[in-house]
Length: 105
Image 1: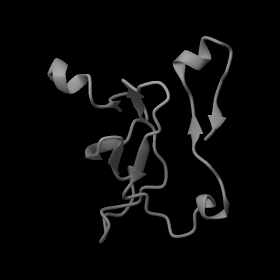
Image 2: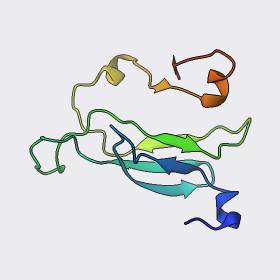
Image 3: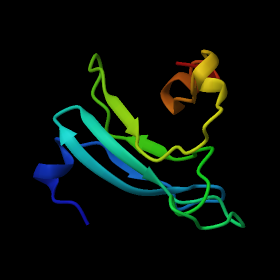
């Protein structure tokens, strides 16, 4: 449970749904958060605790015209398409109501 005062100042993260893999979130600055993913199922737990190659979670309580920084701390894959310029996929329910679907951010 989050108090109304805190709720008004922070983002709310959720991944308790099929495929959700967000384990923990730490707010490090007013608009910056460190995100820790749960390891992929059926991967070998090693030094890093297993593979984390993807992410799926929801974020609510965002303020308009504010730029947020989300740091995925343990996205562990040495050779990733992000190294070649790929950008994360993003979906906004507010934009979805206007006919705008998934996009890269």
